[in-house]
Structures are given as C-alpha cells and as structure tokens.
Amino acid sequence: MTNATSTTEFAVTARNVTKSFGYYSVLKGIDLDIRYGEVTCILGPSGSGKSTLLRCMNHLERIDGGRLIVAGEFVGYRQKDGVLYEMRPNEIAKQRAEIGMVFQSFNLFPHMTVLQNIIEAPIHIRRMPRAQAVEIAQQLLKKVGLHHKANAFPPTLSGGQQQRVAIARALAMKPRVMLFDEPTSALDPELVGEVLSVMKDLASEGMTMVVVTHEMGFAREVADTVVFMDEGVIVEQGPPSSVFESPKSDRARSFFSKVL
Ligand code: ADP
Ligand code: MG
Image 1 (cartoon, rainbow, N blue to C red):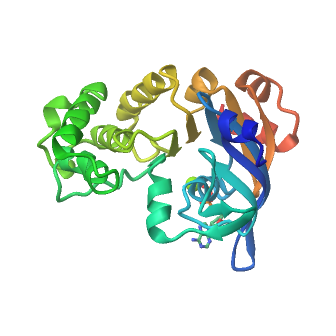
Image 2 (image 1 turned 60 degrees about the vertical axis):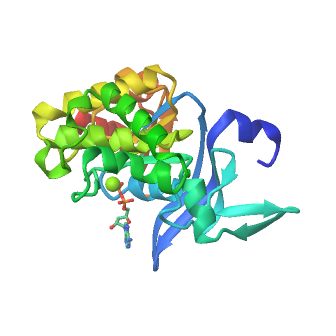
C-alpha cells in the first residue's frame, strides 16, 4: 500500500476498514480500490453504511481499524519514518481540501450569497487572492448554469439550484476526488435531472467521483464501477452491466428487484 503505484493510480484505497458507533459495527472490513478518472456508484439499502464510508473518506468520521488512503494520503494521518501520526485540525482541513463533498441537504451558508459561498474556502483555506477566487467562482457558476444567480441568497433558490451551487462550491477547491452522498434524494422529482446532468458533465470531463445514490439509471449509464453494500460489507462490485444484469448474491438480487 505504501508503494508508488497505489498512491498514484488509485484515488481511494481501503483495506479492511472498520468503524463502530459504540458496540454497533457499521463498517465490517471494507476493501475497495477506486482509480482516478472513474465514477463509482455505491448502492445499497438504508443503514448499510454507505454514508459512513463516504464520511470516513473525508475524515468526517474516524476509522477504527484498517487502512484508508484517499488522494495519495492516509486520511487523517501523516506518515513519517514508517510511523503514522494523527493530524492536527489545520492539517486535516488542508487534506480535506483535496476531497470535495456534496451532501443530500446542500449545506450552503444561508446568510451568504451564492458567490460568497463559493469563494469562502478558496480564500480562507487555499489563501487564494479574492479576485482570482471570484473569477473561478464565476466560471463554475456558468458551468452549472447559474451565472445569473451569483448575488442571490441560497434560500431564494430551488433545491436543484442550491445543489448545483453546492457542486460549484466543492469544485472551487479543485479537489482530486468528489464525494456525493445522495445528492438528489432531497429534491422534487422534476429537479433531479438538472443535478444529474451537471454530474454527468463532470464525469465526462474525467473527474473522479464516488456517488452514493438510489438513481439506478444514473449508475447504469455513468458508473464505471457499481459497489453494492449491505450491513457494513461490500457484497458485490463490478461494472454496472454485470452487477445489475447478473448479480451473484441473493442480497443484491433482492435489492435490485425492488429498485430497478
Ligand atoms: P446508509 O448511508 O447506508 O443509510 P449510514 O452509514 O448512514 O447508512 O448508517 C449506518 C448505520 O450506522 C445506521 O444504523 C445508522 O443508524 C448508524 N449510524 C450512523 N451514524 C451514526 C452516529 N453518528 N452515531 C451512531 N450511529 C450512527
Ligand atoms: Mg446515507
């Protein structure tokens, strides 16, 4: 895992990752390799540990055991002379900047304009000059189709627009990996398409994306790899054609028969 290949080729490497909340074991030994430039969709029933796995990748949760390397670094730890040291909060913030995250509930700052939401982290964490941050923000707003909303406040926008702002905000940090946790689950059905369309564009540009979703159509069309989780383990993974068309396990078969 410490050899050069794993850190350059793979955006995410998980080896026997475990995580419990109290006595409740949520991740029971996750092994996963995600290549740069690929889209991985994580599917599975509610409570199977999908969000927890994503949150561990971004160090919003600490793993209890195993190894988790994202964008070439042990999440939350730095390695010196073969020993792992837990990072300080400022080091964690810097590391997290390499990993964009988009939540189901958008999590925009409601009292700041769309533009302010996007330039905040580049200025304060990346120490980017304001003018440059504004220019990048405007380009990103154009990309997600919201250049006319730069001065609007998030609560005045639709859910679909807010989620597109949240995607632009994450992209402003130029992350190496983008994590999405059910990005369309909180949206009215007619607004789902505009968010998925922005995500498809990102995928076609080669962004590395890990997407927890119930949008089977998106997974089938866009994912390079589909990962099916249940009860804290990865039950199956592979290209969408094989996982969807001929699932090997009863658990995956039964899940897909309900959602497809
Ligand atoms: P999923 O995203 O697949 O629905 P989660 O990762 O959110 O699943 O949750 C997996 C399990 O862990 C659930 O049973 C949930 O109740 C539990 N869980 C998640 N976060 C916490 C927490 N902070 N404290 C205690 N239990 C948690
Ligand atoms: Mg979840």
